Length: 231
Image 1 (tube, one colour):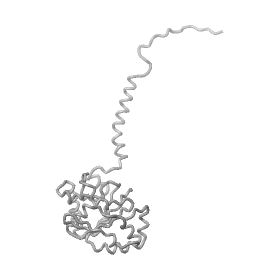
Image 2 (cartoon, helix red, strand yellow; image 1 turned 60 degrees about the vertical axis):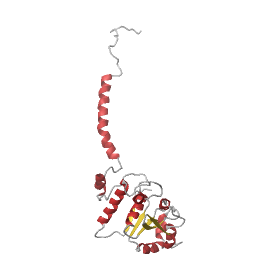
Image 3 (cartoon, rainbow, N blue to C red; image 1 turned 30 degrees about the horizontal axis):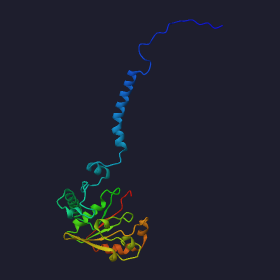
């Protein structure tokens, strides 16, 4: 048989068994404090951007010639140093040109490649402004070598039915695709990219490069607007 007896009378608890408010407050506070301390370090560890001039120098171990602020152009075809020579952006471009000239006193620069990390960083705008500044003191050629996403012809309002791609392919001569741009007394030559190519590297293996290189020596400065590094 089964027998049962009361050993102790159950009493009503004075506080709830769960949740334990004090314990939860202590644990929550400790966790919040730990996350608050760890978050900045994690963000710094995972960050893949360069935030300022000093960090750029420390990362690349190279000098920074100039920094160009973000600005809005007057129109799609405007060149800042010609259309707004007194603007802040123009002053920065002039400072960049001065730094380049100063850095090349002992060995003058005859060819310059302009690129960026990603599309939209301003490499073509920089190439155009540097070309306009350099053309005030010498014979300048600007080459649009971005044969996947050519843009120079749109910025200058010139045709792009034939260009560098056709020259490298051996279809036309360099003189057939050379355009002369003249604004406000500043004059420089331009070679557009031509037809878009999905594999521009294949053109570099062709013999058309020989005629291009030969003509490049006719200029005091050649500025090549290249594709973005990560494009």
